[in-house]
Length: 148
Image (cartoon, rainbow, N blue to C red; front, side, top):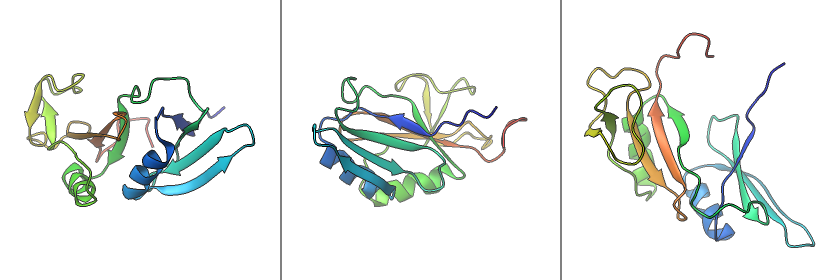
């Protein structure tokens, strides 16, 4: 049985502001529905992704900005960072972790620049949406065994 991650719910305070931000990233607007009871559901999908994000009014009880560690996998973190910066996104410089395995929470142990060997899974950049939900770009050029 396949279990495919389809949707991640992110908590936002201002639905229109969030929709504008994610569209600025170049994400496809899949849906924007409002029900009579005030429920509003907005769904957007990053380019090339099989999973989408949903946010809206009455969609989540979580505190806006509390979603952290949301990963976007890219082939070239330097180019992806430049693209987002050109769209006006406040994004960190590319970094790698001093331990070389996985980056620490927050900004602890960040070393400026991509991984010196440009190993897959080892170079990052980070940004937040207007509510503070935290996103990480991770460069993956060669998948680990068992991954498609």
